[in-house]
Length: 492
Image 1 (cartoon, rainbow, N blue to C red):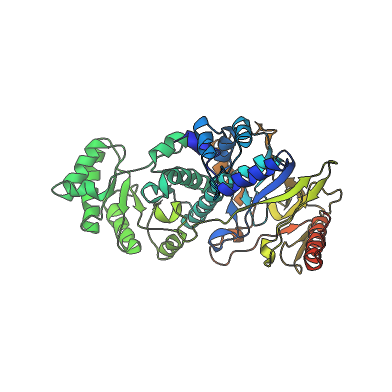
Image 2: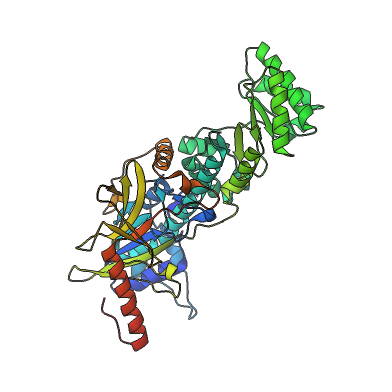
């Protein structure tokens, strides 16, 4: 199962049929440029948290086609009962080793629509075949990291635990979600395999079934305290919540006499604002102010915000379904578009996808993102073309609204976001721990205006195109539209 995650068969059939077409037309080794990006921030928000690069690197390093998989492709037939693929093409695929250049924004980077998150340069066939898995990895993990970040923002300084294994979209989805949720700001996970694989802190106590397995609630708490004296958070809402809190208090006091400290209680149903406030009173009056109150029960950033506004006395939040499934937006909608092809004379020919919707018109060139900073705060991002001989760093031009521009002060400093990950198929990007990635995301937020993190009506961070790139794109659009109207091929 693990090896299949790196197989060329983890693909859409049309990628392989296109690949065969490139090979058949002697285009497969032609150098191409692709960009992976998204067009709209998820969750009606103003930002996204780039995530998934680590898993994408692992996939590209281990990309292969086994004998068994090659035989399977050889057995695929078309409507005429003849093979879809020639033997020579399958032999080529089997011997192929990843040899592209890859540049990407580091994980944990705060990113915005239209900006390339990842850039691939290399043989057209290779760059084409890796599209589906790169989108699968980057789209999903960026989506979950962003959701996690929003929940962390709503929780303020309270710890947030991801515990969505049983509700996640399959086993791989659960592991990927645990990884991405941590990048976005979660303190840890309930998923023990994710804890081992990614080095994440793991958390967990007991379920209602533990309480129900005993004759009464108090006996269940006492038995759990004996089994886990150093990990006691009592789930108190199996029968009567406030009575459950009092039972937990009684057992917590016995634990204290034995030299141990109960960690807290968990509320999983009912009016969490009211019950947490009443529970806090009971715990404090019993001389147990250090015991935390953990809230679960289908929570998300909006419910957490509402509970905090109601004065809920919750110290830790457990988030499952609505985090790992990105409940209110199941997909990021990222895309992977061809942006340039290299000609026989060594020059790059720009490529652009037209659309009736301006939002869906792609941007040509070898794109890079330059982030400007002034007085300790990020003030805007510029998308520019590294292939262009000229560049104007003074003005950002909105990608889809010609009336909107932003002037960059001369005193602003700048940093390019895309960094080299692979050179000719060789990984040069350093290994980075998830703790470092999480810290990067947290540090970056401090340099953005807090208004971009607002859940309701967030500020739109300025992202624009460099003026020369804007002109190139506009002129290419006009030429393509004219060629469509006149039926005259456009010279790129």
